[in-house]
Length: 354
Image (cartoon, rainbow, N blue to C red; front, side, top):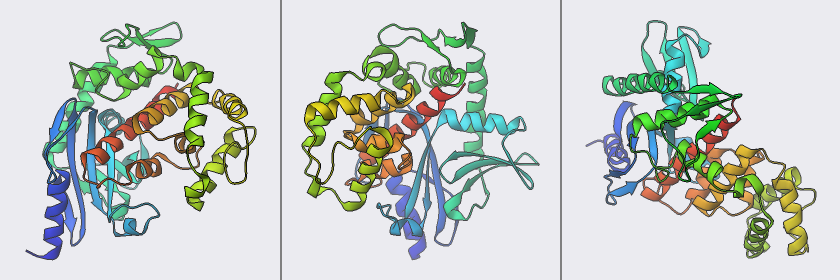
């Protein structure tokens, strides 16, 4: 077996994905993770996941190996099923960015789905030169089915009192699904269509909404939470933080806080730091507060790394790389974290949508 063929087989086996296209060492792989409780077979052994559904893609990307944060020569995307269904629905109705011979819509960093003027659907992964790669028939069937589910979900959304509601499910605490964002509400209805036994434990938009609606942390950013975050940060030794990460953390504080509370040569009391942090945190939009609570709680991401995303010092792809360091890229731990990050990012976009 040729070296390139062996590499392709290893990627397919390790990530439990199927080869969609290849030309020499360049290749694109993909698979639909339907969501809910799934057991994924992998070379390191089966792993169980409890997230909502995503489209998982893997592309060879030699340039990634030289990135500041490890990528092992591959690039991954985890695209929520809702995002992909919305994109294909828009393209089928003549929307999206125009290009010669068709239209496209971005569904992830440097990854798009496109439709030609003749109706053919294709993936467009940036690391592979932005070439159009035909969607295999079985995948296209799944895409079209999800687009139909999205249309059905939309028919269940009611407009009322300046917002939108869906009565197909309630939060864990029994609250109704209501929000100013129509897209957020329809995403929850769509998740219920794809997972009839949808639970908050199936992390996705519904789960994130439960965090927002059922708990006070995101809404209030209470003083005891600020104190806990400060105490946690004070446990880190400034000298243990690399210079590039420290510069990122200092920039986060410059963007969000009235003064810097942690860094080289600083001596700010815990009480003052908690007060300053609380004042800054409460200036964040509500959806960003929810995202912070999710990143801090689900990934043990600490204080400044989630805030680096929320203040645009880094993007969610970089955040995913940071919180996945130490895990093998095909491991269940990294795969779950990347799915979580995809949904946390999507929640912020949907909740801010009007």
